[in-house]
Structure formats: structure tokens, C-alpha cells
Image (cartoon, rainbow, N blue to C red; front, top):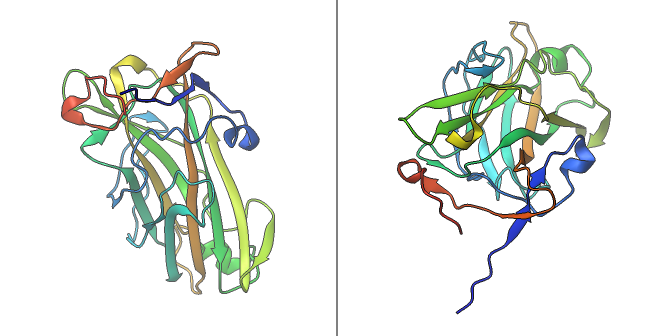
Length: 255
């Protein structure tokens, strides 16, 4: 019996949103339909200041097929805080604690966000500024292939400090919507890529860190997550390795 094994482009380093959405079909590097709620985190790479965890809420869940979907309606990490009042945060982890995937030369990542305010027609007033949910930071962990249970946690800097819209807005289902795109193309970290496996993706959601009267009702959808990589093989193709337990992360296992 002959088994067909799909291959993928050996370099994927998009420079903008258009390129992010181009190329081969989704090269899924980790389980993107597994979500857990996390406590305060302190990164080891990138911006190493601790993540915000004031007044924690744990309402985010997986919608549909998970955050690798190109359409938020089909799959995302979905969060709705309702009439949220002042000063909240959420830290979520996408992936599995005891599993990793590629021994991969990760060079960056990107993802999209759809924010929907349901109790107003604007993202640009005091209540939006103080109480709407926004993406504050993102990051990911890598697991060392050899030499023990050692993780590396890369984090973005603070991306926003208030809930106002960064981009254009539009009327949506009686409220207002806005889209955001986040991307890092040069991680600028100091590590041997051949000795690490991708483990999990993290998001820090927040409302502004002030206690003010008023409220806002916001829904947030995180989707179209892609990791960027470079195997330096020109136009050659590569085979995707399978998800595997961390106890077997030194082995090459393909689907």
C-alpha cells in the first residue's frame, strides 16, 4: 500500500496581513482547539516584564475548530465579559501542557482579532476606553528537546492600555465592530532552534488598569493564528511532524 504524505513550503515569513493569508494551507504546529486558563506569567525572552493578572476572569473558551481558522465564525478563542465594570484581566493558553510539535525554526507569528461592542455604537468614548476588552500582550512557550523539562517563554511588549479602537470601526449586529492584526516577524532571541519544540501560545486580555464608574459589553474573537518559520531550503518542500508527548520530543514522528 502506498501512503501519500502532504508536504509544505520550507519557508513561510510573511511581512504583512496579505502575505500572512497566502501560501500553503494552514500548517498547524500545535493543537489549536485546547484552551486553559493561566495565572500570572513572567517571560524569559522578548519583553520580560510580568503579565497583568488583576481581577482575573476566566470566561474565554474555544469556538468551533480553534484559533487556526481563517474565519472567526468558524473557529476562535472567544471571550465575552458581559457588563464588565472596571479593571479585569484574563490569561489563556492555547495548546497542551504535555505535548509539543515541531522541532521548528520559528521566526515569528501572526494572528487576527475581531472585537465587537454590543452595548454601544462606538469604540471611542470613556466607557470604551476604560471598560472594553483588548489584547494587551501575546507570547508562546518552547520546550527544550534535550536536557530536562525546561521552557522558554517569549512575550510581546504591551500592545494597548485601553479599550478604544485602533483601526476603523463599522456597525455590527446593533453594536460596533473592529478588526486588528498582530504580527512579529523577527523574534530576535538567543537560542538554538534545533534544540527546542513549540509548546503553547498565550494571550493576555485586559480592560484598562483603572477603577472607574461605568461599564461596557465586549466580545473578542482571536483567530487565524500562524507561526512563521525558515528551514533555509529555498523552494524545496518539507514534511510536517506529528504532535507528540514531551516524553517523545526527541523523536521524529510524522503524520
